[in-house]
Image 1 (cartoon, rainbow, N blue to C red):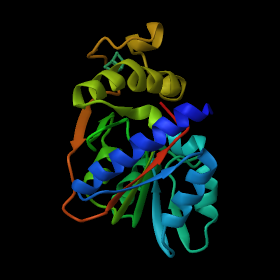
Image 2: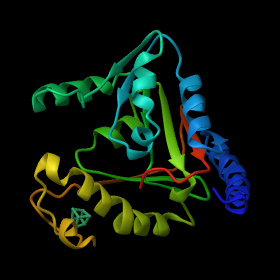
Image 3: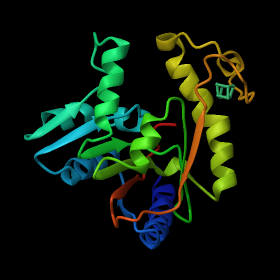
Length: 218
Ligand code: SF4
């Protein structure tokens, strides 16, 4: 990665981590994906149950296999091949009581707010309440100026790209799949249903954001 861009991102990350701290959330910076992988694994206690959530950022790090292989860790994985939809839903429900959640955030504002948009809500629900520890892996490409910019980022990049990712698996028929643009549709298979903004935490450091210098996910 370009050294000037990395230097800028490291300085910006230091500011964002301070802002997260004001909101009783922890943060750390990993310059590379490889360092982020080690950081996340180090944050997961043992023994622990860990719920897997849909995340291109975490998947892109190749982390799920590492987490599943960590001694003492039980990975609750609703994406295990061969599960029926009912079995996948059951794991997601049990994931609400997991010790640890590992996921990403669709956007993070410079002043430390986490903004997300979900289809069914299990991911944002577990971010809000349930797992004792929430570890969010966020590429610096997802850091935006403010909440308005977060909405714009999610509508123009994250949501249409997630539609592309999920279209074949779930038979989605949403207009953004055709032209790459969000139409704020009311489609039967719409995956954009639940917005959340996390302003802060009541339990200090329950959420830990690992900022990554490299682009990660979308
Ligand atoms: S609201 Fe509809 S058109 Fe917009 S990204 Fe979501 S599914 Fe696609």
